[in-house]
Amino acid sequence: MRGDDRGLRVRSGRRSVTGSRADQQAPPSSFLYCYSRAPLPASTFFRALRPESVPGKPPGPLIEIMRDASRLAEKDGTVPPSMADIAMIHIKSKTEIEKMRDAGRLAAEVLAETGLRVAAGISTQELNDFAHRFTLKRGAQSAPLNYKGFPKSICTSINDVVCHGIPSPDEVLKPGDILNIDVTVILDGFHGDTSRMFTVGPITAEAERLIADTERAMYIGIDAISPEARVSDVGAAIDAYLTPLGYGIVRDLTGHGIGRVFHEEPSVPHYRQRHVRDRMRAGMTFTVEPMVNQGSYEVVFSKEDGWTVRTRDGSLSAQFEHTCLVTDEGYEILTRT
Image (cartoon, rainbow, N blue to C red; front, side):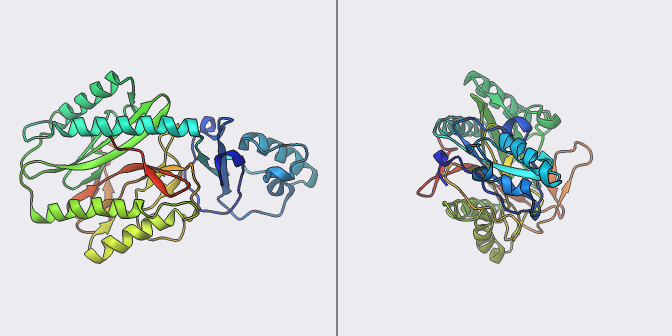
C-alpha cells in the first residue's frame, strides 16, 4: 500500500501501547494504517471504518473517519470504541522520510562521536554531557531527557545492564567492561534512534562472541524487512540465529515504530512469537534492537530508579539498534553516517 493510496485497513491484533492523540492525526501528506486490537463486531461502526463505505467521505485521517463512523453507528445502536482501542501505524510521506533520514544520520553521528570518548577512567556522566552538548550544537534535542521522567540525555548500560542505564558521575568505566550507548535525537520534529556496544580495553572471549553475535543478529533481523512481510518475521529470523547458540533473547522489551513520536506502533519483538503479525508497508519506520543475554532471557526492572533493566541471573547483555525504513524494494537503514 503506497503513500498516495490514503488507505485504512482494519484487522485484529494484540493489545499494545498507542501513540498520542496528536500523533494519531496524520499530516495530509501521509496516511494511517489502522487495525483493531479486538475482534470486530458486525456493526455499522466497523463497516464504516473503511473509508469507501462512508457516504460522501473521501479517504482521510482516522480521526475524521471515526467521527463519521460514530454518527452512522448511532442508527443501529452500536457503541464505537474509544481511541485507546484502536492502534495505528503511521506511514511516512516522502517529506517525512527525508526528515527521518536527517534525524537518523545525526543520531548515528552523535553515537559515533560519543563512542570515541569511551575509555577506562571516564564516567558515564561525562559521556552523557558530551552527547548532550554535541546534539544541541547540531540544532537538535536529546529525546530521552525528561522523557517520562528519565533524567539524562542518553542511556549507558554496562555489563549485566540490559538497557536504560542512567549515566552517573559515580559510574566510572574500567578495563574489561562492555557498554551499550543508546542515542535518540529529535531533529526538526522527527526522531532518530540507534545504539551499539563499546568495549573498555581487553574483554573476555565470551564477551567478544556475545557482542559479535548480537550485532549479526540485528542485521539478520533487518534483512527480513520487506513490503508484505510480517513484523514477526524480524523476530523469527533473529531467534533462528541466536537460540541455537544458547543465548537468551529478552522478551520484556521490544523494538518500536518511530517518527514524530519516540515510540509509535508497531511493537517489534526480537524472538519468535505469533501475536505481532502486522504486515509491513513501504513508508513504515521502526527500530530493530535485539537485547541478548549470555544466560536466561529473564530480566529485572529496578525498583530504585524505575528505569535500569538488568539480567536476572547477572549474566552479560548486549544490544545493537538501527532505525529502519520499509521501502518498495526492501529496507533502508536510516541511522548510518
